[in-house]
Image 1 (cartoon, one colour):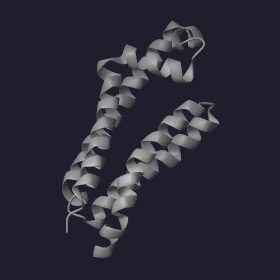
Image 2: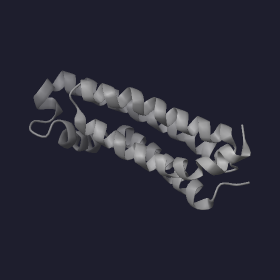
Image 3: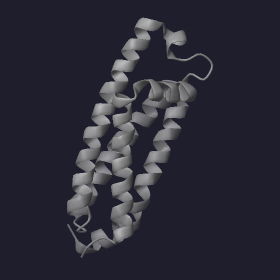
Image 4: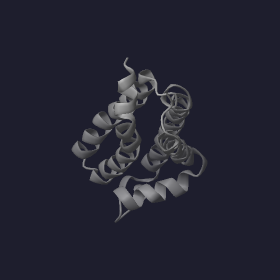
Length: 145
């Protein structure tokens, strides 16, 4: 039994959006740095807060982060279009596990590091992913593992 199209399309859309968001860190890094400056360093910006050399390193690590997010997105799209769409528990577990794993590591780290804005952004992404997961849980788990 397939998952309702609204839920797998929703999950597909959020997964692709995650990849686009990540890819933007690589393709248009200055725009993304300005966006995160507004979120994390609203009064100064990265270069003023840390200096030019540190700012360059931050840009580099943002590019690495973007590449990882893009790769994660490709994996999620594969799971969405395959096992999740077909209502297979393994697809649901793979998606939920990777999202929960990311959230429970990154969000406390953001808060403990003094960046509640990143934790808030994480929570928005979590909600976007959680809605289709919650909506499909009973249907998927009715099939059994």
